[in-house]
Image 1 (spheres, one colour):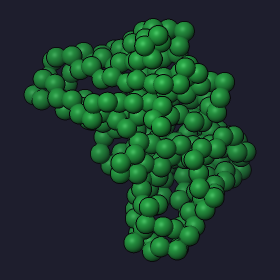
Image 2 (cartoon, rainbow over the protein chains, first blue to last red):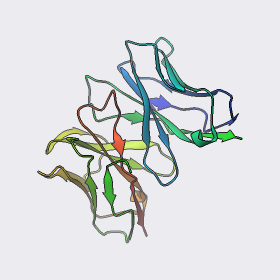
Image 3 (cartoon, rainbow over the protein chains, first blue to last red):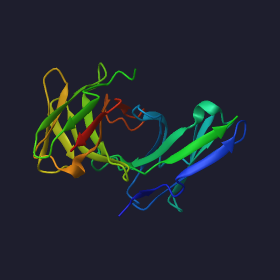
Length: 114
Length: 114
């Protein structure tokens, strides 16, 4: 039973346009959400996080939106650059629960074309 | 270089054998986490240590064990290996909960069981 789902295995976007990566979760106890980026042969790299008391968090070209009622979050990358081509993982956890237990989605492979 | 060092990078071993994966966390980080990434799965949480003590446990098999030493490095021991244990094993570290600033991942150990 997948508690964190990334339903799009891949996404292709033109350079300069917006990339929108989506993530759905089922556990209403989740209150922290994180996005990671992973290049081949490297470990995941932390991008941005959001707690459930917020609905938006911005960091440069990256913005994460959280819709608690829909149990949905999205990562927006504007403008997209070829160097953003990587696999993006959404992760969630409950602060009151097992803090180490970040539940990851299976990832979305983003390709940004020049 | 993320600051988290994992050795070895690659490991090929036979079924029934035992291996040890090593992780040195980023300087100053007290928490160490182990994750497994199989081909068709996302990152699966195995276990967390904080300052030498086990803090949280995920779907870790009884054949697997881990520890964190006084110098904060950690080892993941995998025994009675099966073909299905072939995967990428990631170690990550964080200073406290890692929920706001994320975990820092190493580049992983690729284990192949033949």
